[in-house]
Amino acid sequence: MVAILVHFCGTGRVRNIKSATICLTLACVLTIPARATTVIVSNTNDNGPGSLRQALADANDGDTIDAMGISGVITLTTGQLLVDKSVTINGAGAGVLAVDGNTTSRVFQTATGETVSISGLTIRNGQGGEGGAILNADTATLTIINSTLNGNTAGFGGGVFNSGTLTIINSTFSSNMASEGGGIYNSGGGVLTISNSTFSGNAVSETGGGIFNIGTLQVANSTVSDNSAAFLAGGVLNFNNLEIGNTILNRGASGVSIYSNGDGLVTSLGYNISSDDGSGILTGPGDQINTDPMLGPLQDNGGSTFTHALLPGSPAINAGDPAFTPPPFFDQRGLGFDRIVNGRLDIGSFEVQGPTLTPTPTPTATPATTPSPTATPSPTASATATPTPTATPSPSPTPGLTPTPTSTPTATVTPSATPTPTATPRSTPTSRPRPAPRPRPTPR
Image (cartoon, rainbow, N blue to C red; front, top):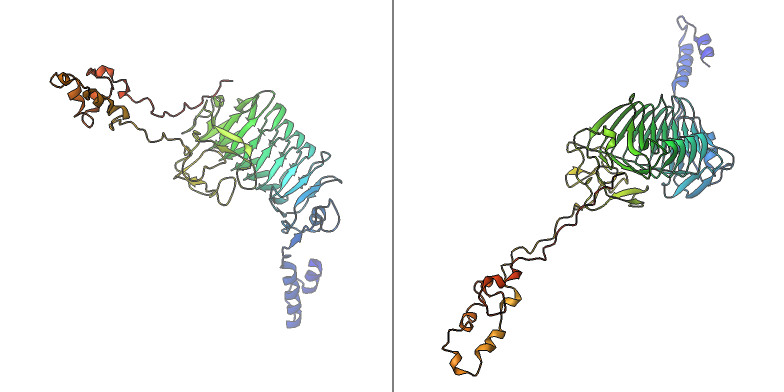
């Protein structure tokens, strides 16, 4: 078409108005981009009309693939889904719609140079050499939002193998397995950004249970807990450049919470919590090491993805960066779960909502100024009722008992007639509630 236009219009002066009009019309046609459309996924079949696979085949660059109207499981039986266009894939929610690799294939692969967004899906049971759930190719840009990657297996990157640019937002990587990089393997050319997300229960036979990084990695407002490795880091392993802030690092059954070798550069942005010593690299402001973050189990705490709640008394509550300002406006769970409550950020991907759950001792009954019930020894009045008339003139202790029910209780607390104050052992209250001692982390 361009060749025809050049041939028709030439490079010189257009000879008449009619020719000029034709040239202008053809030029406009060539410069109008195709309008982005929405391709609907209407069933959970692996292929055929209305399937996700067919939608990917039919879509053009810039299109949105809408799977928000279906629920259930899309089980792949004819191999992985190749995303070779720049598209947005929207699911109905991680707890509503899953794409299952059937333990026979990887689930998604993005093609080189494409820009792809995936949201509202669970991606599970994928299997591949590089990337069990997703392989993000060189120069590809992938964003994963409000999604769960669970139960995927690979040699490298049980959840995702990334060679391009990968952004993880409000998502959970759980129970993925690999030789290296149980959750994510970020290769040498990879750029990985993680925000408001959870890595839990991922495991490797070698190292880097949660995240294996030899590229560029930034982690913020996230929780990395209960991941394990045969050696070195069960949580985050860094061999290149890492920035980390406002993140919980809770070691799992094996491997330290975070490790960086001599070639790796780690910048702590501060306000991190590590259940072990953090390999001596968490030295930013507000960093806490050898500190139990006090997390609940990975479970449904609201929102579309599972999270680890902060238990009452957690040192992560209101311990985040005091200078933090949104975005993000919400924690990992999304709308309805504010990112800042009580005026300060919590550490990790979970924000305690409502009044702070930090235990404050119940109002203590410290001032025992009110007379103890035993301080009104009315039974002694019966002692004055003794029929012996000679008892009244004698200066016995009984006259001293009659005026003292409301006077100094310390002298009359004891029911015995002995006036010595040493008989008042109840003057020091023993019922004051004391906060239970905060559990200390068990050294590993």
